[in-house]
Image (tube, rainbow, N blue to C red; front, side, top):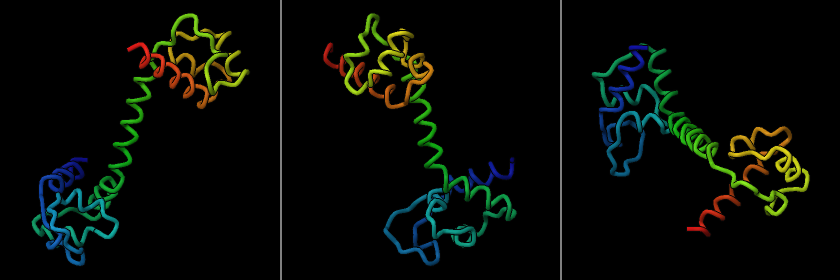
Length: 149
């Protein structure tokens, strides 16, 4: 793990132009080797050609290049998880008439009426409540908040 972290840091710190990478057309931008590693046509051999002083065992390099390629997706997932956690705490107004919420089926409204959830997180955990119903409830709450502001 220490070798992986060391190589990751080296790639994130070293900036090079496309002209330093064999076979990559230059767009005039200088990027870190970590950013270049995200490009599908860039491999470890190319990164070593751009920075010959950076070396790592094959397995370490492969791990770091895979991490770089998937970093955008992992970042997106982490942001989505953070958003879901924030939404989990959204308060469902007391006395909500769920049957009046656009996009909620009669069945979903009845289940929510019986459960009387206090937060969106509680609503999402009501047995049989679909993700679409939770989304409709969140949209309704957000619209209501916007109108009140």
